Length: 258
Length: 258
DNA sequence: TGCAATCTTCACAATCTCTTCACCCTTTTT
DNA sequence: AAAAAGGGTGAAGAGATTGTGAAGATTGCA
Image (cartoon, rainbow over all chains, first blue to last red; front, side, top):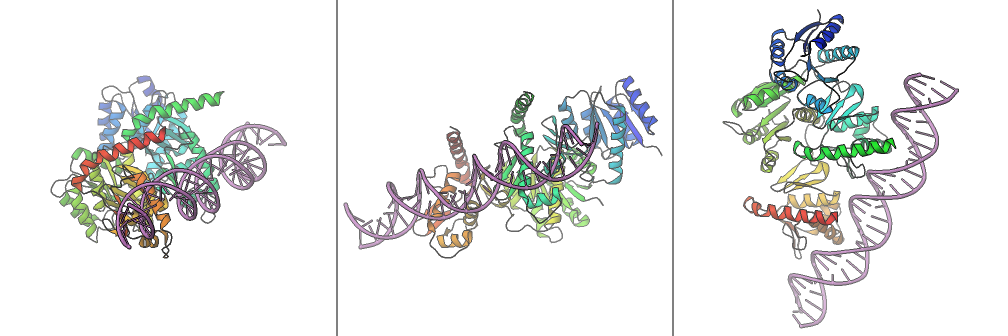
């Protein structure tokens, strides 16, 4: 039994190209050229996965994504969003509206197939995905485990393995103080030795990658004598912070270039 | 086995939106549209977590929260309260009636998922909150032991260990005069009543952090020859004080910046 | 093998917290 | 009113905790 995929994409050429490749890869592909038809088809055929272009006539991708999530009949279908360009603002809003993964145009067709399969596997096996493949999103921060990547204020940030695990550990306990011993258990996997030294170094690395001013941490805070605490801004605070973070990023990049 | 969540929310759109996201996140969601049904369902299905809107027909969220806490069948189920607006009065009363966490509308759906998971994780690990992580609240003052933090007139104030313990000690005996020897026993852990000097210094630190005018203490009062006494304003007095405290805070911050 | 990225370790610097002290102010007592 | 006692103030210093930079160890890969 072939897995059913609903492809919602307005550009006819692109639609045929993608659909052809997927069919060749062993999927049953249904096509829709706009949001309205897409939503109707989703209900009708109940696909295993939805491939959704962000730019759509009639109903745009984000809105459609939200609608699909709201409806009980389609809420649990994984959605792979296709965003135009690297305009990362789309990525983020995509995750916030309930997308499960994203791909930026232009993309490699093989990569698409890989991601589709990964998503299907994820949704089949464990409804509550394990931390190793589940995308975790919290407003301005999104963690993409597959790529060890954090999307931080609309920009992807490459993290190392341990940096990723550490940030993941803090994000899961967002707003709570996480003690060094808990971090060691969660990230490094051992109990007894308090090798707080190492944690400190990795916290520093995270800060240099995320904080506008690593010397004065705004997000990854130190609770003296207790541990670390990740404090992400609420939506109201967000507006003020975006320019600050972006500006700092540009500065650090120009510094790196020289 | 999917964790079961009971969502009690009167607005149908909101209910579907939230439920859709949670179901997609791998939870089994049960819905109730008012307090009465919510309570009945809570007993019936024994969910792993309850999502509770504050504004509800028939029985409001706070009352329901208290009822759920009283009944031993539902007492240990973690409750995540959803409050409209950032009105702190709601937060306050939410914690007072036994909610484990709160979220203010409008909230990010992914943030909701993260918090739900965090709460479930917490309730798994530590069945009951101990004295050292229990949130203590009295009107305009909330103590968050986890972060050694006081929420004072809607603003978080970071305290040191001893400052926190001292304030905790005073808050527990709110309105009473606390003798130095009792403070020493409670906060420092020793009996001999020699080190009153140290207490004075820490009281001063608390005052500079909390009092609008530390020279004329309005809340942390000195009872000559007897000890200290924390006097928090009643709800009626509160309205007049809020601007004063905030103004003083701004002044001290601008002074610190220069 | 050599290289590059990552992780760990270490010595030292910066910061935070707590205590102590000398001195001044306020309240109570004489 | 003066003395005495209790309390407030500012600052200095010790000790602990955390941050920093760089060097060494490890890993994976061309």
